[in-house]
Image 1 (cartoon, rainbow, N blue to C red):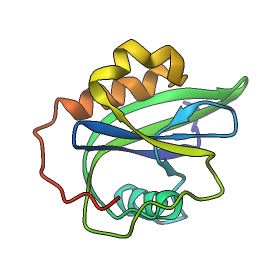
Image 2: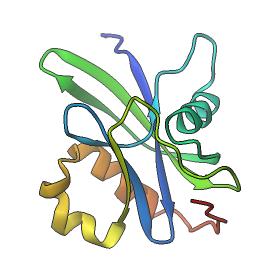
Image 3: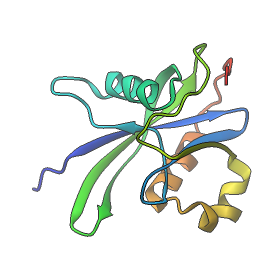
Image 4: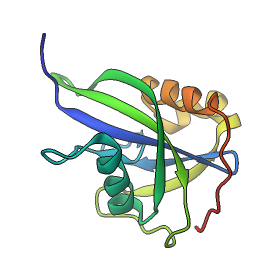
Length: 140
């Protein structure tokens, strides 16, 4: 069995909206990244979300795992978790992304083509939506 590099992603839903970040390839992405050596997945996700957005999150249950071909020939194992926004600093976007948007989850099905969101991420969002809602105090 091939061992693929891992990227941990957070599905952050707050107020009926999901946080998406636009990357340099023009695709919309979920916040997250690669864990450091010895770092567990929830800790890596919490760190990555903070680094990329300045937001503090509580990492919840795993909602999806799939392989994603980022560019031809480069496959990554995506592991996605539902996240809850906790009190924290205002949003600040890192140099890794071009834009951040809170997109109403009700519109994702209609507007998916306009957002160039990989299908696996949409599946993870749908799984996270099916999780019981957890209240949050969004500070954005």
